[in-house]
Length: 564
Image (cartoon, rainbow, N blue to C red; front, side, top):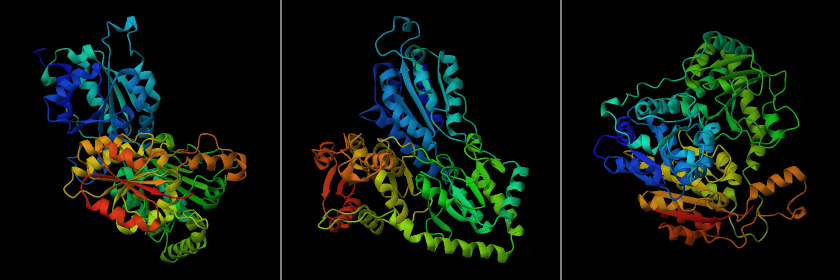
């Protein structure tokens, strides 16, 4: 080939759009793209499994989105190139996770030539059908002349709120076809979700002014809208006198944890969730996972409760509860308008009465919420509790950027560490194997800033064992990353769910497939991929080992023994 091809256009368009990295695991049908990358300034980030590549790209994109909130020149989308049918199938798990995380991803995969597929060659399959349910848009480029428009569309769909992954199939013959280098289409400006319907905002303001005990439930679409949206949530809470919670399975910081009106994350527990939402007026902003993991017997929200729904995703508005006021728009812009309207509609005495009530409620709930972050330490136990671990991490690096997939260690993290906006991302989709690759992607994204934060992957042992070879990529790219594993050597979440479904306690069940016996040597495993490994067996060792790891450049993995 001597001419300018579809692969050349693809790579040049990525560079023109501000893309700097392509994540992937290579295959033969992707060789045209890889060949074009070799002649570009793009950096190819190798994952040793396709799902690792997607997870890395997702953690990278979520972190770059935070950077883009402060620097318009940053391209927040992640780009992934996977290997035809089996490779795309491998990447579906973290594509699913990216969908829940609202990550702007452009996922691509090579495919066989169009005039060859009728022979059903090795690796063939229906790529679009495989991923369509997990993406905002999936399609295949069937002619090189369509490539510029479809690629531009892919980025715009991924980046336009509500953000999420898209997929493009790239047949080998299309990518090898000659085309015009001038055909690249400019990306253009990406819109926000808009200021919302003024009439609905007015209705919401009236309902909040009339409320007795307003409660603000914040979802992760708030954090995705920017630090200004988190500030707007504070303004709305203060203007309305509302107590504030995060939605069930919230995975980003949507409200500062040290604010006096902040109460808690709502746990995926029917009794506690319904108790916290037992009020006359609920405002749900940017929620998307606000229900329990297991079936709940009773409604989580009383039918007499006035509900106000605000989201940049029309699908989420009024989805699980009827909404007396429904606003589709940018969460930050809508909350700004609501706060402004409420300044004059709620007098100082009434606002103070509500805030005093919040403080009373906060004190009444304090011991219950704190108990959710603690495990009783058995007599003679030498391993740390999860609370011990979180306390040591927070004391050592209070401003670290945390990528979480702690699962049963998550609530100690959420309750005991009062985080600020843009300080945490987590696995919102629920399937294991997202957090460790996402930590690597986040560390790469942070390395691109002038003042990189310490990146801490807080990854349960069950999660870590899905993709321990993610560490290879961190070492290969010389990333500064510290992974902390709360290691209880079992799938504790499955044991807890067994008890929830069948009753009893541990002694009443013969758990099948839930214990790592014999255990995997996670230290040797990390070292085999080029990282420094550390075994931490007692609480007293945590802080110093963690501090030493943060002090050093490169990748460290701390296997911290914790008890259930």
